[in-house]
Image (cartoon, rainbow, N blue to C red; front, side, top):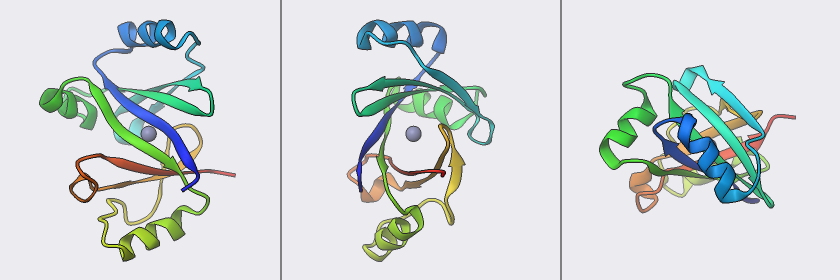
Length: 133
Ligand code: ZN
């Protein structure tokens, strides 16, 4: 894996979370993007070589809404950049990890993504992402 590409943080509402992170990181949110397939709105902040991705549910019973219901707001996933996502998925399957997607799917920020089941990764939801060229 190349680096931590971003850290995903589940928030109840962008209305308060975006200004809060702009103050915290002392940088403007440079992009918001709706990922309809995941029922989620995303907001991005650059921080050095990595990013913070805020996640807001657009449905009362969406993945992020259910996450917040169970655990409250907070870190939702850590995303690692990979050069070849299909090769990395095959490698990790071979190592016994549960890859939650059969094939990579289109994520926010021009990326192909997939997730690893947290039961195999000490409770941390791991995302792999590869830039779409
Ligand atoms: Zn992410």
